[in-house]
Image (tube, rainbow, N blue to C red; front, side):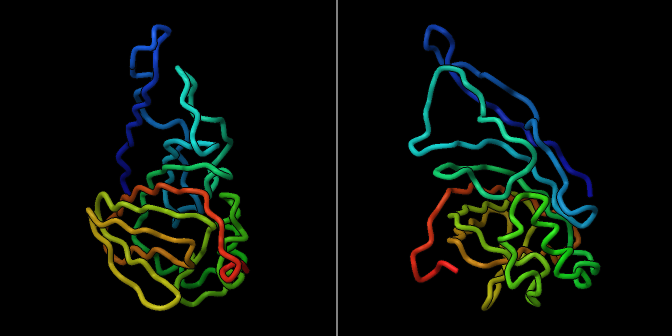
Length: 189
């Protein structure tokens, strides 16, 4: 899989309050998760509060590594390059499935203790996620049903258990905007 770089442009203000381009280049955190079978994460930005503070020239709040969910009361935007599914996904053990998510601080997000038969990487997070397909296609797999999403489609993921399958023969690039959420009492588990 050949990954095109992602360009991140960050704006801010100079000392006179004029709008400026503060940064222009690749995001500082790019990482493949889950070895050769996993997606490439391009971490674009995160916020730590709502409303998000806007000041003259601070940068992105510091983070180490890749973390699946946004910070508490915050947001996260990332680009994912998801390669075509490999047959090896079908033979991953529950422990290997959980280890995949543990790499991004989310072992607890794995559905059914990693034993799901719907897709190897079924998971759920306490977030609202906006997923915008830029190129390629993915199959959104739910507990019940599935649908194919293609370039230009937008998915609003509302804390539901789901997986993403790339059943095509080419990469899918998708943007995710994640917003911290809170389950209602009947959805907490």
